[in-house]
Image (cartoon, rainbow, N blue to C red; front, side, top):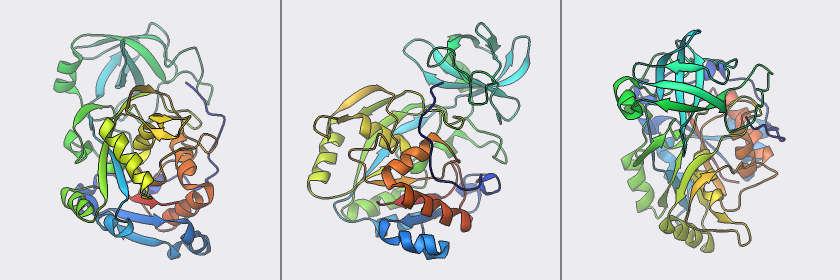
Length: 363
């Protein structure tokens, strides 16, 4: 695994007791009924003085806090059922995550049974994992070399040879990737967004989950554009300090043109989540700072030291302490605004993770 030299400066308690245990629609809320924390530099003083001073809303109010001419960019990737119960030969039951479809083979992660709550870090090259219809042979650490985890215990992701019909196995026995903090398993439909169009993600591009068709209609009728990119997500289980892996993305000619038109007219480019930010910034031509139609694998890591060119607003969920995604949030919003927002979210009991609450950060 690749480790980052930078670490987030934002500090807050681990959200173990405020993780959303279920999708909002299973908790008696509409998707767009989750909470929305609104933060911009003009409110930082209020945020720092009192968490109660920050504006709180519901996600359905999003259009009230954007302006005509702004653009919201969303990810149209569809979440696939990439988690399988399996056996590690000579070791017993495990949970297999098919983390990323590679040009040759797969990147996989082995996790503890039955709830995938922790990584199995002591696997070795040549180990074999079997499901009902697949045989998975671990070839080498992914993305390469023989790095160890931050705890020194071993390796998390593996490049693997997979024999068998992956599509048939996932259709028969696959389920959405989930971790130990959920109260039960939920159907694949709970992990899709209204923008989902192109299958390929291991985990949900969750920042867009609260959008609904009525909200999209309201945004458009108020003069706020919506444009898609594609980024097929890998797994989100990075350890502290671990960089996100390479992911496949595409920014179309149409979206690139609309982004440039929005910037020229003075509108804000608001990315829906870290996936959209990564895709847009991977399509930037550094010499000009312009977005150009692009596709392929990106290993772009956005941090305060490597900041974004075009994204100047962010719709996001809440990330764990020291997560690489938190560096991206700091790079877009700035360290002061990010710290203020997290302080307010903790104080007000916002819910974390993929089925949790949201923030709109407008630096």
